[in-house]
Amino acid sequence: MLEELLEKRMLVIVGRAGGRREELARGLAARALAADLSPTVLDYHGLFGDLRLRTLTPVLPYRAVSEHLPPALRSMPGPLTPSAEAAAADAVARSRTLSECLARLISRASSGANLACQKLSLLSGYIVDGAPFPDAKRARVELATVPALCRKALALLWIAYLRETNAPPPEIAVIGECSLNAREQAWVEPLLEELAARGVRLVLLDRSVRRWHLQHTIVITEITPETRARMLALRLPIPSEDELKRRIAVVDGGSQVREIELRQG
Image 1 (tube, rainbow, N blue to C red):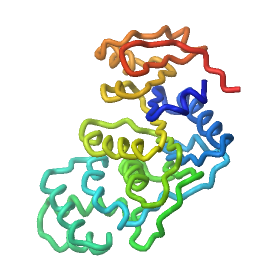
Image 2 (tube, rainbow, N blue to C red; image 1 turned 45 degrees about the vertical axis):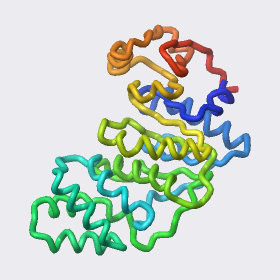
Image 3 (tube, one colour; image 1 turned 30 degrees about the vertical axis):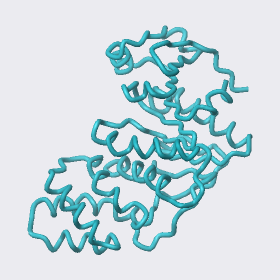
Image 4 (cartoon, one colour; image 1 turned 180 degrees about the vertical axis):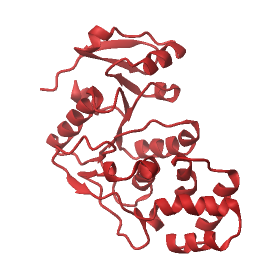
């Protein structure tokens, strides 16, 4: 069964963080390694440390992801006004380094520039001017070490990095938390689609089923209240909770749900 799931272009595994969804994702990554593939794991919750992968600190070079910084600020706590996003976009477009970008924002006497500067400053320990381009193949990116204030934004910037780098991409990328709101989906989903078009098989972990998932293969590992409500809204049959203790439910390109035994051996 793992081999069948590994062949999927984009696989979404739904469940609680730290539960069966990570167990399944670890099994897929381990099977990929055994097949001599080169997975990348964006380890959002620190739950993939037992895999035989190199450990990467979550630092990225500014020049690799600069154009994606303004939309990434939407994923940080607190408001982001249109003027702040516009100020960030203008400063990024005029700057070759993050230091220069922050200096431009500081020099402007506006509330939007001040807000953009505050948010970008939170990323300054992870978006570094002279950092090398990291080789993410056969590696686990330690996103769990990043403060919660900026962890999601940095995780999305790592997706952008995998898309933007000119190096050959990994054969498989496990995204350890991919619960996107509508504004995040607008800029991140095209990056995921482009990665898939380049041959990267994507394993996305999410807390619930979302409408855009229906274009791909969904694996449901457990039924939470949120997942039940979303499945009802999407008119998907709800699998038995008792059955999901022993099986997983797969939604593959439509409204049909099939329950299957998961054998990882």
